[in-house]
Length: 128
Image (cartoon, rainbow, N blue to C red; front, side):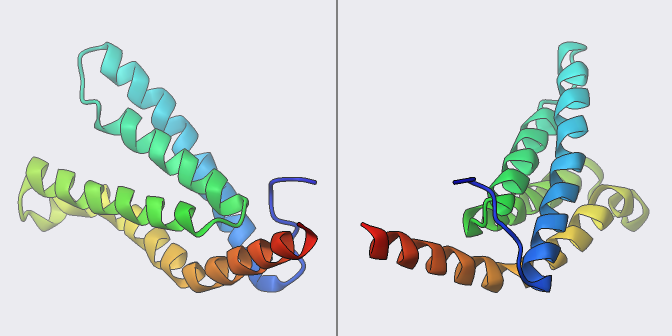
């Protein structure tokens, strides 16, 4: 049995697609963040890259924890952005716009992920 969801509804396909996009954004962020870190730069990018990648993998497994992890990473991103540029709107825009748009999509998927997780745990209990 595969650990990843087997989409059978449009919502499950959308969640899987969103999870793949999140993983594809998180992997280069972690890799390039590690390169920056080794050059003496910020650890923020590698930490957030790993968190975002893990969130995408968890979402692809149908786990609501993945969505919560992504939303937490976006919250940390907002805090980091305010710390770095303050309330400068033009400075904040490139740092938070994309992650926030994805966060809206992830938040909209959260109820479906919870239903999928509950359905999976119920079917596992019936087998045991």
